[in-house]
Length: 233
Image (cartoon, rainbow, N blue to C red):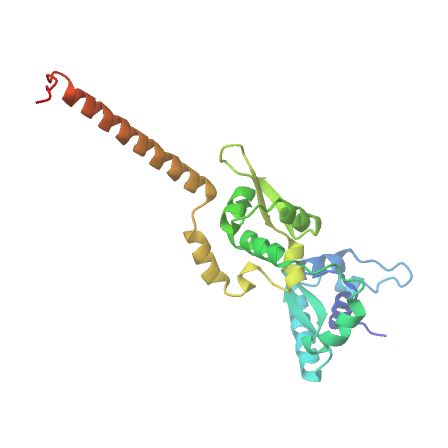
């Protein structure tokens, strides 16, 4: 049987448990061996990424034309075979027992904030939501939807959080720009002051108010000095 590049790519797509990028597929072609059938893998060892992308595009077009129950889509920087949405009721019934519990509204809200503002610290998330987020952060970390990306330069060096590759896979996104109304939400998020900025401004305001009050007291005291007490008539 004569093997085709497109068919091999299709087999990889069916077997992969995560999205595969053209670069990863090229690496597989370059490193694959077949001891039982010498020479089988050799013709594909030097295939280029452009050829792999062409094969993926061709497969995608074929599935769409044939109206198959699955489709080839770009997710999280790679390609993956997924079922079409119209078959969701039956697939949901099949997978309900094995599927992890759905994210709660607070988890989704927190996850959205992190996705739009990353990297972001816990205090800023809590300031935006107006409630403590310790439990939600713990859940999202356990689900591998967010990760610690570093430490802030702010006082105390708090941890910074960002989304993971699994976050993109979970929601079927190619990248963060695929989020609904991502551009508009980022503009709104950029306009929000961070918890540190709010705290600093509050301290400055309090300090100025205290200074003004002290200055007023001193001026009043000074103006009364040297005046003779008045005698009641």
